[in-house]
Length: 343
Image (cartoon, rainbow, N blue to C red):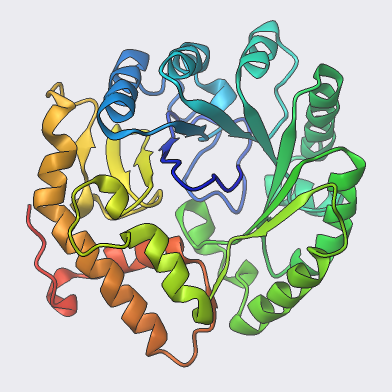
């Protein structure tokens, strides 16, 4: 839910598509009655152990779907903590009443609650008349239990002007972070182009957030946008400082485990052509990352560099989400990019 200090490597676990809500901006196709069982805990834990012991991964970020509907969430979080992971969860905050969930909340290190704006906008986005009230009840419970939390907001054309009000709400309710993420046209949100911010909107958002960041000291405000002038610094975080790639962190500090068991680099939605491993395959994962680096990793490095050049050479693009841009580029047919993808 927050920026990790330098040296942290993050596993983003999406163990289930099950969710009690059917949100318009969902980056997947999560919803009621979908994927109730979720990933087998033992498979998840085994790969987390491999990543921690062999490659130094030390942050586990769990989302979904709604992660608290994942039956094995408690088991996975307990083992992840034993493995040395800092565990954070992204939730809609509406299901915090049970003893099981309170136990999990007491063990994890941090949690982010997704809020879409004021009550009317939030409920409309969530297709539920009670979503906002239940999320607020969840936030109040976190405060009662003394559990630090942040708020994550998907910024849309309908919501960006209300961010000052959302910041006031976050401060009033004791949030430590307000993370703002412009809508991505992926998953169910792929049909919501009318909600996507234009470049003009993004410029206004960028200026607004820059102004707000200097107004409060109680909360960290983070905007998931990169300006072209900072592209070199942002790309450096992904590619590393050396042409000689010897570890996965030289390419990315973020690995994704999807609800189908697929392990992907950089971000959810990355092309399956770049799959590193599948935890459900029954194979030994020990060589998965070295094999990836020796083959597909070389193509990924070229893709990142080509994407950087494309942004620089496109006058119409000033502000963008770097990981989202790379996801889009990962799906461009290899024949049109000049890249050679090694299977």
